View 1 (cartoon, helix red, strand yellow):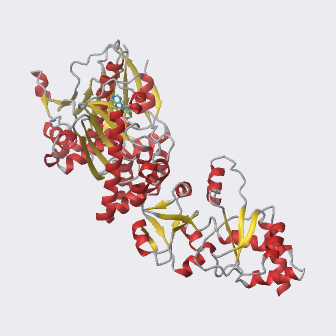
View 2: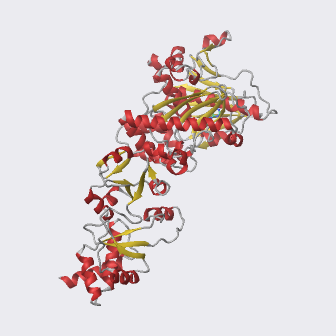
View 3: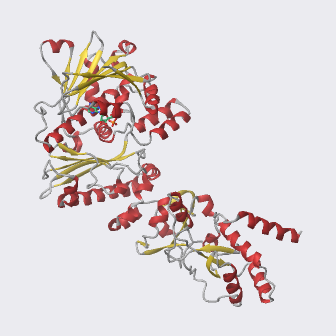
Length: 617
Ligand code: ADP
């Protein structure tokens, strides 16, 4: 009846890390197990609301920590939702968490123990952390509403065994056979009641379910000792809550082991009564840019957990915000679909968004270091809001930061940019592209540099998308310097005598460009490529291709610098009827290379170039 099963490869690697305990604060294993137990109780209560026929006992939902000093075991027991055999295989035998492979790869490259520990901290290990303190772990679990339970056991070394259990109680009991070496260290001896009381107080006091301690003595007289105060943190006045409690609560809701970057409180009274306790994380969640990325806000109704990952409360671009919203006047039975329509939820969502934007703006204003962390870790997701949340576009722009030609390695706010704008400059200028190095020296910038106009250098993928949707900041137009005409106020003295050259080149290059015209944005380069407003940029085209889509062909515009000797020389040749089409093609290729683009036929370009060079030797 007993079967032995191998852990999935990633799970095996993580278990090895746990067994050799690279994490210095082993106490956190208990926080993780209690957190899982608390989630299991939440799920059971919800399931019983939604399914009245479910045969479960919800009369005394709780978490028990049972110690056996002689056997040196600690059992963490909940009478929550439990798991079926298949769920155990899937949830405990494998790691479905996104970003696992990436984390393990980074781990292999980690330079030192601290770096490795930070990675584990960012990832969070959950149930597997039991192997930091136990050399063998047993679990008996029975899914609510089913008859047969399952016994799971492992030393964490490659395999685990499963066996059916006929009379398992509802819920999950995890028994840790404690490593002998921890017995020497009374502070970390998990068979001692003092140790467990201390850890629960520190890490899990706010858990709203009762946590009870059962020791060898108390079990004899059937006594159990409540060891958490069970107060919902968001309902307590800020002055009574310590920073450490907030951090531990953050860790519970976010499954993150790090400290939060910032804490936010939300409350509403009157018709819609609600309270919220929200956090900005200090690093990007592993799944931030994955399709299945989850939103981190839980919904409670009058202290009772209703749902995880409540997308109705948080727009997608703020998916990194973690925490809890507790609303007073909702049905416990509410579904995700109904929530999307609910007026109260919409009002809370609006307030929540405003609160987050204000908090980010305040960091930007007052705490540059924290803001820099926020921006580095989460800025790319945040900027998605410029496209998806038109109502808050201006506030998001104001709270954003952008690299620019003004600061060689830092960023600027748009407000600071505007303050630096010289007389005569009418727009906020930007250039998008794949990397700072490739666009910083692109020909498009020349005339702007010459005039002392600052240019924002936008190199995140998302920049390619929002820039088309944003036309102004605080009344000042925003303009791409690689799109449309630029008017740098040089007056109307248009150079004469180039019309024939432009027509001739337009015909020669008809396959590649839609127009050839004179430029006002060049000073030292002979030519550059630009688009019309609304055209796909080359980077965006590439992004579409990378996603397996074939974008419509966008021909670009070739602009020539009439001041450049190559251009005026070519005009003279053309007037004399001696212009060489190869030169037109070389000019086009050079413009493409100068902006970091790729030639369609590099060999043909190089052959033509070599042949022309040869003639000049
Ligand atoms: P995480 O809690 O971060 O998802 P874990 O490895 O701790 O990761 O747990 C994996 C999954 O196993 C949980 O998401 C949950 O579905 C299930 N699980 C763990 N502990 C319990 C428990 N006590 N009761 C029911 N399910 C559990």
